[in-house]
Image 1 (cartoon, chains in turn green, blue):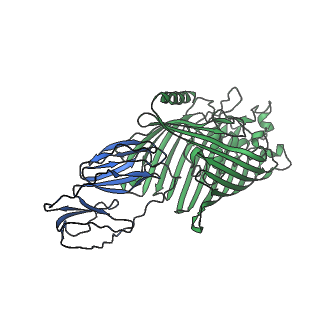
Image 2 (cartoon, helix red, strand yellow):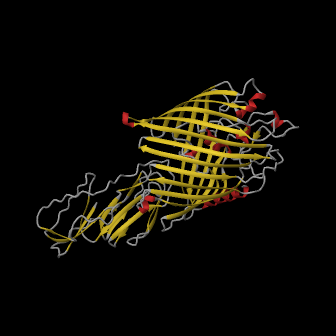
Image 3 (cartoon, helix red, strand yellow):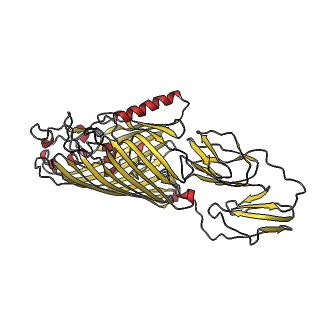
Length: 409
Length: 174
């Protein structure tokens, strides 16, 4: 991973001496937040929300730079800043893209560096933000915090319009390093719904479960570093996209970080062998209506069945623009989330089971092309077995209200 | 729908060619116009009205070219000498697709949004060619030639529904 980064940074620097043409975008989102009293997981609390306090928060400050380098090569960097979390400023993505011009309608592309696998149908705005919601689904909240490709992705694609067909497709495969700790948060904190993306060298805290942090138990820290390389093995994923015109799109991914679950690094961070299937649907029955859905099914293993969990989650959401009622700047969005983690191991001091569901309603008003205001209410309730060490019952019920102003440049 | 009419006789006077380059613009990640018809020998300029990079290309035998169009940048016009159909695309935005129809005849027309086209012609016999991007082999006239004597009006109904793809940013870049 470090080598890939060095290569990317080196090429970025080299580009500065060439004649480069770049596009730079910036986005700032400040939110007024009213949340429950529960302490956030980012403060090692039992809460599943990102914000550490009520009041005005810097939800996102994002700078996206896209530079054309030599023929067919471009470099993309995304820098994120937050008022919450451990690493408040850093890169979330940094990669080179090779997109050669070829005569065939089947066209190749190669990405090298650090970037999101494109398995989400909701994080389609610049900076991997959602155009419809302030918080992501449970699935993509997890993708945002624990998943990043640090390697190479090769794809072939064909656009149907070029061959007078309604069908477009893309197939891809990737090998990567890092992501060895992926699965930690699902097991020890459970799914959460938020929009805090981990940046490189970030740390994500969680509740210090006695069976995890006690020296005579797992003796692990109550935090994880999401993209850390621990076992020096390569992981991989494969994916396929299929689109009908620009009305419907399916994306399937199979991911396997191929981690050796018996390796632990000097910080007592374990490698977790995590695999999953992800199926995403995006459907536009009418131009003003978008329906999207995603299903995630996977498992994670740490040690000799010290942690052996199955996890699954699904959501369905819809966004409706009110232009037919004369309010084309107003968009309503709703999403229902369901999630669960099933504990299959016999380690009694580390119960990992959790399940829950969430309902999110969001309204966005575009004041100008560069300024929007969004308001969102979310109810997330569930059951998490390891809460028994901290409170009288294992249930939780969390509400979050946000009023956010987003400025783009 | 594009109609070209090539006179099968010698014209008394050659219509004056347009001096200004024709324009194939790029607006909101689409080619504008979607179909451009020009007489062979015409220069076409490719401005980029978008605030982003486009990489316009053609691999069509009629005219092959590649233009890197930085944001709000206009490349030097290209001359289209050979008659034929030129498919143009953008290597960054695969769904961008446009067509340039190059004809040797000075007489051509393209339907407007109402599906209407008008062309003024000297009296005589013409070879006709019709073309539509989604039905390139469509033939509207029974014969390959058309004899024009006075003002004539034709009505055709294409047995197909053409709709622009509903454009949405959320789809992948393919």
